[in-house]
Each structure stands twice: as C-alpha cells, then as structure tokens.
Image (cartoon, rainbow, N blue to C red; front, side):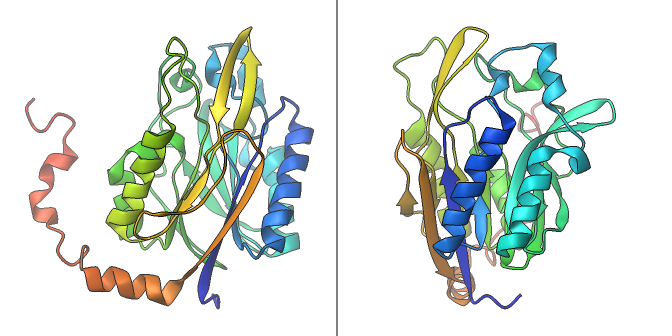
Length: 292
C-alpha cells in the first residue's frame, strides 16, 4: 500500500426496481468519484433494487444470490479492477438455507477480499429486516486494501458505538456505512436525519478517524405502501465535523481526502486508545448490565 492519503468517495442515488438500471447508475457515479480522485468508493445499502424490507413477503427471497452469483458483486468488482479502486458492495446474500444482509469488499484488482454480514438487524414498521436476514456471523472486520485499511458496518450497525470501536481497535483507518433510511410509517412528521448523522459523527470523533455513510434518495412503493429516503449522505472527519454532505433529494458524488500519517499521529497524541480501561468494561459484555 503506497497511498499517503485516504481518498474517500460516497455516491448517492434513487433506486429503481430493475437491477440493470441500478448497476448502470452505480457504474456512472463510481466512475465520477474515481475521476475526482476517490480511491475507496462507497455505494448505498441493497442498491440492486427497491428496499423490499418495507413488507414481509416470501417472494422477495428470490432477490438473494450466493456471493459468486450476485450480479452487483460481479459488475462492481469488475469496475473496481477497471478503475483501480476499492468498492464495498452491498447485496442480499443466500448462503445455503439462510440469508444475510452482506457487503463484499472488492479490492483495486477486482479480487473479493472477504465479506461482512450485518450484525444488528432492525425490525419495525417499514424496516422488517428480521423476516429476511439472519444476524451476521462474521464479527466486525477490517480489510487491508490497496488504498487503506477499511472497516465496514451496515445501516443499523451505525447506531452502535461498540461496532465502531471494535473496527477502530482492529486498525481501521476509515469506517464506512452503506445505508437505507428515511421516513417512518405512522410517524409522518418524524425526521431522524440529523440524529442519524450526529450518531456517526460521534463515532468519528470518539475514534479519531473518518466515517462515511451512503444513503439512497427518492420514494419507493412496495405492496402499495410508499416510503421515502432522505439521502444526506456524508463524510465526517476525525474530529466528527462534516467534510462533505449530500442533499436530501439529489443524486450526489462526495469526495474527501485525509493524510494517513496525520490521522495516525493525531490518534496517538490524543491517547484515547492508550487510556482505555477494558478491565472495567465487563458490563458491555452483558445484555442487561448484569442484572439477570
């Protein structure tokens, strides 16, 4: 790895329910990000089609593919090789008799370095993911890519500081979160976008490293119900400040660069990892604070 800087790109777009159209859009925007200098480029969660988890319907299991058979993984890994960039690729994975919400990490030569399966699975109106996805079994992972050491979580994972800290302890230089989040059925006036951003900005600040999130935009109708997605994709710096931010409604390409040596020096000088007290954190290994 020779890059002195992390060159991070994030793309944001509206998804149709036609996989070929979405792959074409991802292709176009990833190429734009690469042309602007990005070398690690994040595409949103489950971008192959509509966010089908709005409803519980067994027909949607047909959207899943094994890693080596998934059209988006095949297409974007080939694009990663063509452009010499790193692309975390979100897809609906079928593994034997079970299904996962998964990201495959395509390195700059197109090789798949491995997968991460979403650990935290939400279940609520409009976000019925537990019906489709088994909780991930990979644990939190970090990959030493051609352009930097990358940690990846998926959507609901981004609300858990333990996940970000685990990836930081594993040596992540940047944490990336592909996302699908927007309106809440039954709560038309509720908007979580700023809370969503601030939570992840906190991960960046607490771990002294950049964090980026890619969200979809637009409205999608599934089984007669319409859900809207608020975009607002962003890249936050190691102090948590927003370096780049997309709008709520528009297609976007964001790019930001960070000096890797400066990031490492700042982390060391602030000593937040030196002064950790894991001997006192046993309560974090319990579900209920040890009250059971």
